[in-house]
Image (cartoon, rainbow, N blue to C red; front, top):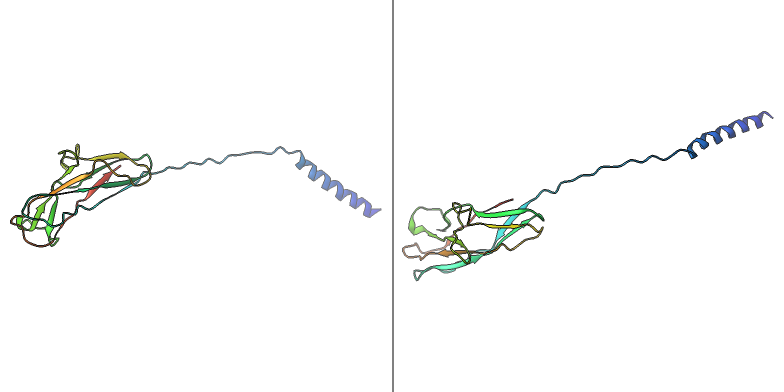
Length: 163
């Protein structure tokens, strides 16, 4: 009989403890989530390969500028200099015989693509998330090589992209 009382007491305690949980109302909550996509850009361009420079006259070549920016990011590409030069043996020199200037303009016009003309001589657009072909292309003209040292001339143009 003592055993039966203990069994009844244990069963009653278990029944009461589970009864409370079956009538409980569930509670809910939320998790807030935020994020920011930061606009980023990079820029590349095709080479202006002038080939054999000679005294017969100017040689003109074009370059296509390709910005890659985060979708929706407004970008502007400008030249970081006012004068573009090809240098003999890739050595910067003030001696006229050791460099050839190659002014750059926006193709299809005469708008100079220079630092001092950055307000007008620029390329603009809005990023798509992929590389884009900026319009217009750039046209560079290497002047005559009269009085210039014979040899290999190289140079580069630094493009600035702001966004």
